[in-house]
Length: 177
Image 1: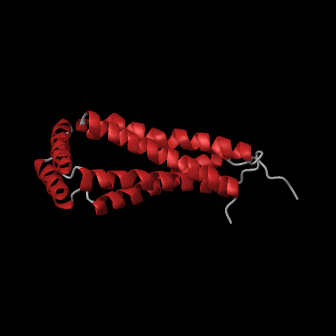
Image 2 (image 1 turned 180 degrees about the vertical axis):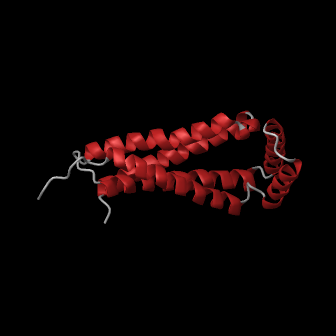
Image 3 (image 1 turned 30 degrees about the horizontal axis):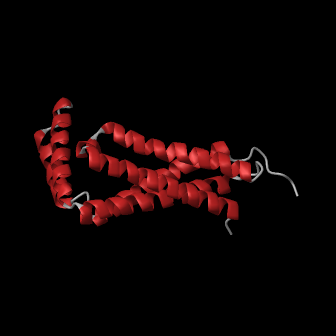
């Protein structure tokens, strides 16, 4: 059974994470859709999955009076990440597939142009580039299914990050009964 403090904190910070990521997406959409392919927006999103959980783990460890086993620290992070991802991906699915489906084509074209310019810098063979472009056009990276697949991959990386954070935030020693 999950401790109530862990459940409450993880849920609260998960909602904060999801809303923050959704707001970032909404601002990018409202300001300039080119931001969706900017490298630093990926870095910003990743930093949310580090900063918010660090605050969460500090608060939860404090609320538990310093008694924070590895399993509880990981569980706290993972619940937060799962909720944050669900909210963020849900928002993107609604945005790309229901609010403004035409934006998917614009983003796909921008992504392809970015791939072309990057491939030229790294001397990627034209045949490999053409294959990548064909695969992108076939899969629709902004579809509901592809967004869910991306969320699963992100959750895997979040789990790894959660394991690392749990090591740092776990109690050094547990009290003896």
